[in-house]
Image (cartoon, rainbow, N blue to C red; front, side, top):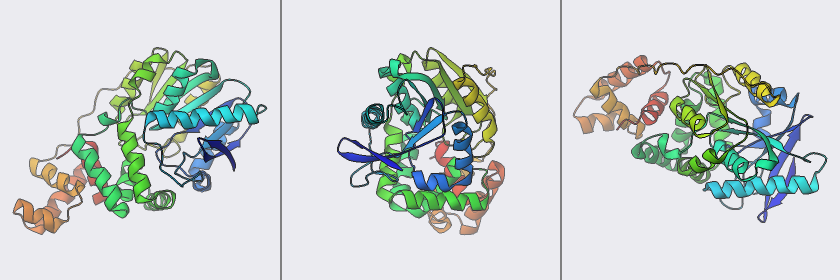
Length: 348
């Protein structure tokens, strides 16, 4: 664990492996120590580190970085952090970062990676964007975004579970519990809400259009956190990009089936362009009745069966049955997973 001073704050960073530098960062929530303690994450990073020097960092206000102050809530703020870190490394660690680096921007990290590549084309070799989006406001409807922000800020226990079901829909109970614990240990409710608010506020459209570097855009077909269509939109915005559709529904690349992600990333960074797949036809969503959709929208707002029953003039038993039927149709294991689906699909 090492530190770089950026804007008067200490930024925690680590490096592992040997070879050309690959920078990973910009996650909406991260903690260098807790991430490395996760077996799946560590295996993913180690596979990259077998061929590259992998540099990771925590944003100020989060993880092992200086938490005396807020996290960046604008793309400009995130760009200042990444630029400051790489400037520090180039000056203080020339043997480590002595030339162009490659960037792996995932999810909310897409925007800052694209912004840095657009503004510093001579300092970036290759750009990889995974689970990406251009505009945060396209992830969900205004009401869905407001609801999730409210749940995270006011009911962090429920909020961390809803986010877990969004990010890791097919995870085991133990994996879900572990990620819930990770979120609560790595961020306060206020920090988590601020980070999520930033996710929704980012708009990297202009930067993406300015990128002229070799770029690989990867997206899992059934990603529930960031809709697949948003990944295709990112690829369409970047002139020199290759789009690759991958199977799976987990948002995090190290969960589910990480091998296809690793193979594509390593091949691309080595100068081999992965063969793009033809986009699959949009799949029809599950057929929910109007009442089931209405009930799920209220579940997503954090209401209990009794509260929903009172509002809709139904019995609590009937509400419970509607939730159970919807869960069966959606193929999700928990009530919070159904709530996550409702938020993602803009019910309400």
